[in-house]
Image 1 (cartoon, rainbow, N blue to C red):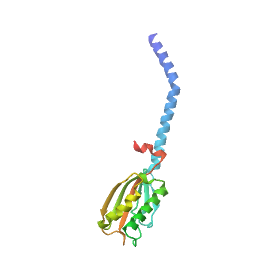
Image 2: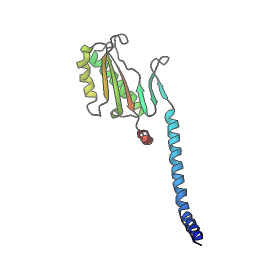
Image 3: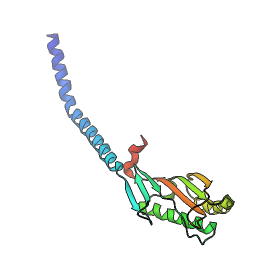
Image 4: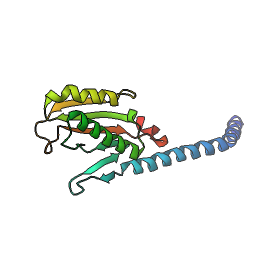
Length: 168
């Protein structure tokens, strides 16, 4: 008799919890399916053809991260003009993909001559003055494209409402 009552109690509890278990199972399935779909979408690489499409892409996006090509400028300009042009090209890429300047993660700056460092910094500092600063590397690279004094490459985090799981 005692065993029989325990079975009846368990049946009552199981019957009362069945709708809750269905809701929880549905929510878990939806979350897992959403993560799977997002990861499949994130696994794709999006590329934009560069000005030399046979050699490189202007940028590539993978797993919520943008990587730009090395950006150069008109070689007839001085270092300030070339820096401003490279940063304008980078801003155009950020605008195209919908990433604000504050999403920049890192920037690599290659100078043909480190004597141009101070002039480049003046333009760069003004460009990043009103946003979160990315990490930065600046090195003397020697020979860049013909006449170019600077080349800039950047990476940025892609914003999006579906990117929350990438931080886990």
